[in-house]
Length: 466
Image 1 (cartoon, rainbow, N blue to C red):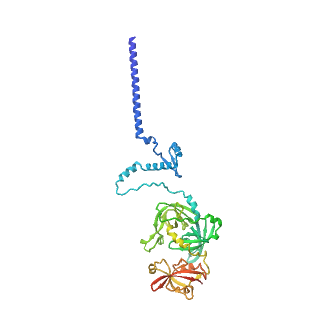
Image 2: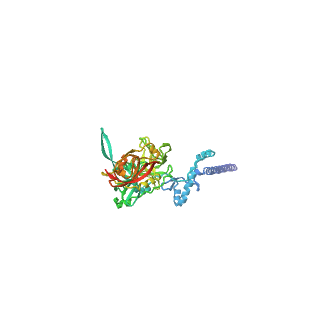
């Protein structure tokens, strides 16, 4: 009996020892596991869970807000003040931009002799929504249509035919009787009839007020009495900006009558400033002040906003809706893409102001056009350089008893302008006089020969009839 009790006691002791070992092992395992978890939480804290002070990854939205990738965090963001949210965005952007790789590279370059660029604090993004600008500015832009007489050769037989062309214009002002529209000279040059279409699709006849061939600028006029009251309420006069401080890369918006289909909008950026280009036929555009190409002042704006035929004369705008340029031309070459040009508004504005003061020519040429009474040839060579002339007519003969003779114009004088319209040869003179009739009085600008050389000479002439 005692033997059995001893065996039983030993068995019980063994069980107790086993249970003790199991408990001890469990405690030891739990302790090790706890230590491992603590280490993971401390060392890999950011990867396991975000700290309350750390920004949660966000996706920028088009309205300037953000979406969190944590729905609960997003709910909290909806309750925060907008200014606090912006501050959090700034903090997040700053911290995200300083990744480990970038930091390592920056440290490598910290001792460089060449300065590193500074990251911008600007949150500006590429402008894709220009609806507000277009809504405000579209009423300032018009479509211009003209009819022209063209000449063609059919098996050696020359014949004339009527053609139509289109362009664009910008409403830049008005006077007591006229609405004034700026455009390119090549849009209205040689036109026999001009019509303008406004934003409400109404159409009115227009007349040329002034042109500048060298700068490819023109101003045309429409009688205010010809406009419907509803049209007057719809249209607007454009706000002119300042193109002197344009920066390459800033957004640009072009509005115009592309391909003659009506007003359309294209967007892009300012690709370059102070540019010039040569077309396939050789003339150089976008320069002034010198015949030496290397020393010419270049002034064109280059943009990748699409400028196609028909856009000429339309508006190039900044994001504030101000006109910064007058679209002029596009290189038509299969090898180029996204290279359009505009005349800077700061260059064009003083010229436009001068053209706006000139006398408006009738919309149509007269069959009984006026007569001056001279013959001559285009000024070339040394005279142009010596007197810094762009063009003019060297008068080779003044006919007897003609308006020119009565006004004191003499052989050897150089005719420069008639009523502000530049004349470079006899064809230009005939073109200008075709808008006047017998009895009209014009102002003639000349250089007249004196013992001290050529001197400026202005006179008024009462035109005769042919």
